Length: 226
Image 1: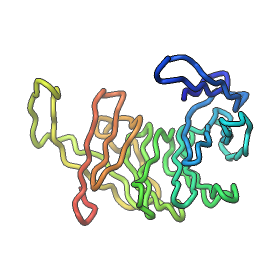
Image 2: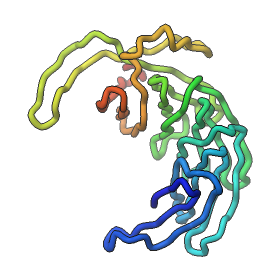
Image 3: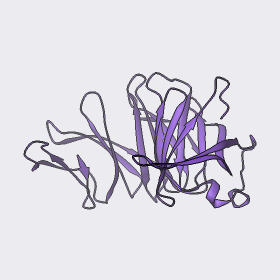
């Protein structure tokens, strides 16, 4: 599936590599997509609306509106509890109950764009949030409050060159003070390159960064320290 600037989702056949279906979802450009377990397509747009469509009938099932008119940038659906999480262009995170389409909470976690939100499949407590300010944040799934925020120290612990993996550098992570407001201008930009996407594993998080063109693997100890 590909979300396009004309507001349509184009479904491609992986074998023939041809477009097999076009589903009109928005009148504005589509910014993000996700798929539910019952094969419903959820899409965010630059208008801040989220549309849910059924590809089998090519019908819109529902529309969810956010308060952010600059657009939804990322979607993450939690099938086990039917919760939909979203990140916006102005740093807000949202949570809706998909059964009632009701907004449960919204919190501004960053002054800038939120590019990615993810959670462990069976985790009922936290979300990992990354965005343009480069700070990796953990947010409570139940109320949207920020649990902790992390960056990386500049000092190298070790570095080596691999023929297959390229340059590998090891740095120590740093947990920021548990304040509601963090002045990101006080944190060097090379410690917080923009996070474009992230994935979560057991006590590990992988983030990608377009400004430094690298991939970072964050490792956490048993007490959730870096």
